[in-house]
Length: 192
Image (tube, rainbow, N blue to C red; front, side, top):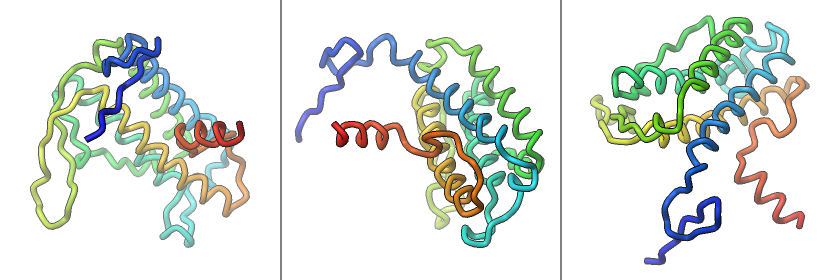
């Protein structure tokens, strides 16, 4: 098997994460949530909650709420030590009411701003259904940092779905909305 070295911020290839990595992860999470707020600021309430037939009657609000729920799961794990992706709020108000989505996002951002780098190293247990063949979801070990990275990438996927709905309805989108950072970097590299 080929060994792939992890390059830290100083270009060291020891395979160990550099000191700046936790701060960058927190900054990425805050930036991701801000991008969501930027989108919400551009939408009308009816555009946010309207189901679209081309995407299985999903709405922008439904995808937005789903992504935000994953961040709320992380905040709950601060006390419980359990990130439970199966027992999310699924609050219909966040899904249907633009102002509630904005307020909820601001609360999540505010809570994450209180985290310091050491929080990301905290070990947690994670419950998440991975198959409908077994009613008991597996319980795995992780860290809050790893799960924060997951929440961001999972959320980007849902932002991409929001982007599809917005384009179908000719709604404005913030620049780069719903595009994975790795895709942006790849496109830049190709452009030279």
